[in-house]
Length: 521
Image (cartoon, rainbow, N blue to C red; front, side):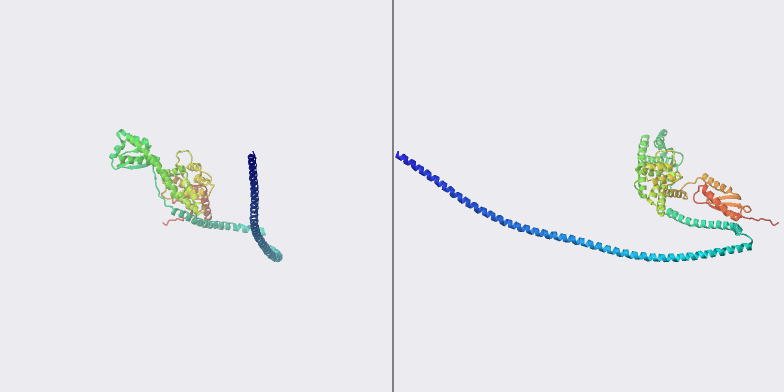
């Protein structure tokens, strides 16, 4: 029992000692931890104070630098404003100086003007006095002359006018003739210069197209093959081409007859291919004609494109290019239409350049002026109006459309290019050898020319010579005087100019002569 009590007491003491040791160790540990915390906090505070000091110094430096920068910029702006102010002040001073000089100059001119005005006033007064004196003296002279002549001033004036009227009329007519001759010489010189330069710079071939094409063959044996059994081949060829084929006794030749040159060309090329190939029968003929027709259409397009490129004309509608190509196979009064159009285009370009107009526009109008002669359909319209409508359809410029429509006076001319196209068309057609002359119209024009001059009194005979370029008028010497002959020549020229249409100019020569005839027996 005692041992138990002793053991219990010992155990309690040991437990107490253990608890005491634990408490003491914990307190010591707490003290040490607190000490470490204080040391660390002091270190952190010291480091923070050091870093804050560094940051403070950096911010101060940055603030100083920014201040210096702002100060510099401000000084720069102030200097610029000061410079502008100084320049403005300098300009103002210069303007003030100029203005003062102008004021001084104005005042000086004003003074000079006043002096001139005073001088003119005094001179006018003197002139008025002189004029009054002159009028008085003139009245005195007139009174003396009236008393000497026994006529009043009005009567004397009428007699003088009457006596000088005929002399003045003759002198005026002579002067008019001189002026007209001089003007004609000058105008003709300049006009001939432009026209000759234009013509000489254009070298164009002249092709004459007919309604007949001759197809040459090597031997007459081929004629039988072309005709075929019972004429089947030639009938198939005529039906396919629309061309009359004449096979007669002409040696080594077959005649192709048609008004349409394109059809004749298709027939000629088809015959050439058939004869070269040797296989001539209706089926082969139809095949070859279709193939040839396509080739001709391609050639038409190629000719149109090449023509436009050669002339330097761009932007044409494809349909207009095709119509230009068709001109190769058309003729007008024996003149190939394409060559004529190219010739007119070049003439228009050169003449427009000489006159200071647009040469490209004139060349374009010259090329297209006869486009109405080659339409796909044939409406009953003049070719000039039809060509104008075609040009309008394919968006050509109004100046070009008007030039096309007005080149035969079918419509009113509204541009300067229109008369150029008309003149160049006439030049190209009037060139010797360019077109076949219609004898009937030529003779009719000469008769009209002669009959027109016969209508005047005193005219005995008239002769149109030099292909209608000159008209000789013979008048009676007892009926017409020399002065009246001059007037008659002028009046006939004016009437021909107003009432007739003719190429170039007509010279009117009035002949008045007296013949005294006697016989020695």
